[in-house]
Image (cartoon, rainbow, N blue to C red; front, side, top):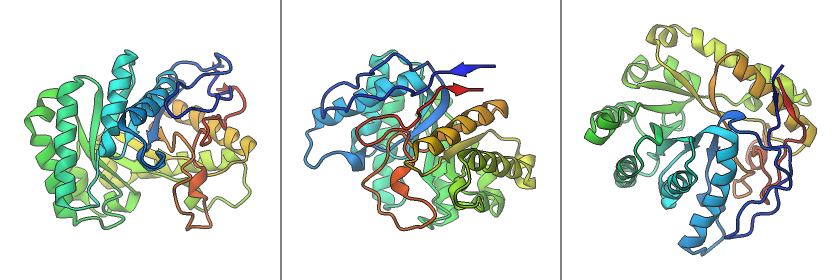
Length: 306
């Protein structure tokens, strides 16, 4: 039996430019695989850049104690740079999956590309992968031919090739299963699996959602186009939307332990409750997926025992 003391302690509220301070030292290193992080939309209005950097640095002090990987959806708002700078300052072993946003047109994508390449050069060895878009096919952000063109061009970029960084995209099962050319183009297959949007009956224990995640992942692995490709699979998102601390803890523990058992490379969705999001689906309150509350208090309320 392996015991993880993970995010048990409540965290003191995070001041705008102050450090995150633990009430206890209960955090254990690398207790789960990865976590998604989207700070830009949650910054207070008109916050100065130095305070943005301080907020991200404080968050990275928590990330450094908790995970192996950090997944970013974009380089927007200098946050990728702030995160990498903070992790470098901490001499952290956390690696970063950098996303390049494609939903806002060619000009925005080229800005993302320029920033990502600069970060690869500035922080050698810290970038784990590059992902072109998030659910770009599912949300029809751009034609699949354009997405594949972006992926191939990024793979051929001299800085990316020199650093030997894998390139892929994150999407849902049908986007890959129905598009073998996309599977062929990527270095890794990035799959988002959200059990809240599956057929788990409402009111089920958190463990039922975790088991559904594992079942969906294993079914995806067995899809012929995926199995034949024999490429690494990274789960870009898996989470459970709830502010019920017992339900969240049960889901989190089950997910951490089952993913470790099945050797699944996953990124937990997401670092903090995202109060800036609009609730538009009655299946999941998208504001409540976070591991931490907006004031940086852990929703995991017990030791994680596997």
